[in-house]
Amino acid sequence: MNLDKLNEWLIKNNCDVAYISDPLSINYFTGFNMDPNERIFALVAFKDKPAFIFAPELNVEEAKHSAWNGDVYGYLDEQNPWQKIANLVSERIGRPQKIAIEKSFVSIARLEALKSVFTDADFSTDVSKLIGELRIIKTEEEVKQLQAAGAEADYAFEVGFNALRNGVTERYVAGQIEYRLKLDKGVMHTSFETICQAGTNAANPHLGPTLNTIKPNQLVLFDLGTMHNGYASDSSRTVAYGEPSAKEKEIYEIDREAQQAAIDAARPGMTAGELDAVARDIITKAGYGEYFIHRLGHGIGMSVHELPQIMSGNDFILQEGMCFSIEPGIYIPNVGGVRIEDCGVLTNEGFKTFTKTDKQLKYIPVKE
Image (cartoon, rainbow, N blue to C red; front, side, top):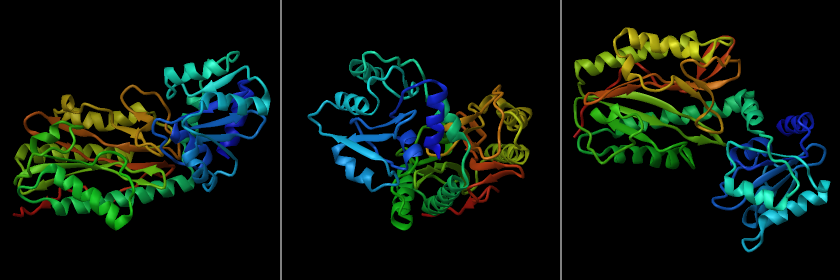
C-alpha cells in the first residue's frame, strides 16, 4: 500500500510524524477526496502508529464512508484546529521531535501555526519528493482511470466540433462542451477551464475562451479535460472551420508530424530531454522553432500537471508506467496557432495514448 511506503520513509529518515496537507496527496494515500476550501485538512502519519485524517466536522462522516478505513477526527469552526492536532498527536506518540511536511504545498502561515503548537519539533524534512516519486509510476488501476478520463475527452471533442457555427462565441462552444459532459457523461468537474480559441487567438496558448465569435475559414484550437474518479485527462486538437490559410495548413502538418514522431520514439530508458528534442528538432528544421514556446509535455494523474516534465535539457530517465502528455505547439502572432496533444502511458512496447480522436486535419463545414 502507498501508506506503507510512507511509513518506511519515515523510519528511514528518522521522522516521528508526516503532516500531509495537499488534498491530492491525501487522496493518493487514503482514497478520500475533498476540497477543504479555507479550512484545515490533513493526513497525519506516523512511523510506528496508525495514521489519521483530520478534517472539518462538516466532512467527517463523508471521510468515514470513503475508501479510508482509519481514524477520522474533526473540528468545529470555533475551535483551534492546530491545538487539536497537537493533542491528537500527543495522545499517540507524546512530543514529536521531527515532523516532515510538504514544503511544495504548505504555506508559511500554516507552517508557523504548526510550529506554535509543536514548539520542540524540527520541521526541516521535506516529504514532497517522496510523494512525487510514488505518484509518478501509475498502477494498472490508475491507468484504467486515466483511460476512462481520456474517453470523456474524446466525447468532449465531438461536442465541440459539432458546436462550431458562424457567430457563436468561443465561450459558447466551451460552455456547450462542459454542459454536455455533465448532462451526458455525468462529469462533475473538468480538469481545467475548457479552451476554445479561433483564428489569431490560438496563437496565445493559455488565453482561454473569449467573447470573440467564430468566423469561417480559420483554425480552431481546443484544449480540454475531465476528472474521472480523481484522475485527469488533458488533450488538444486543432480543426479547420471552413478553409484555413495555406500558412495554417502548413504549420498544422508540421506539428502533427512532430507529435507523431515523439509518440513513435517514446521508450523507457530515454531521457525527458531526448524525447522533447524529437519533436522540437522537426519543428525547428521546418523553420518554426521560435514559435514552439513551451515544453513538449508534462506528467498527468491525480493532477493535470505533475511529474515528469518532458522538456529540453531534462536528464530525468523515463520509465515504464509513467503517464504524460506529448503536445508540441506552433504559435505565430497575428496568424494563429496549432497544438495537438495526447496523454498516455509509457510501456515497453511504446507510448499508448488515452485519447483516440483522429489527428488528420479535420474540416468542419461552415454552418449558419
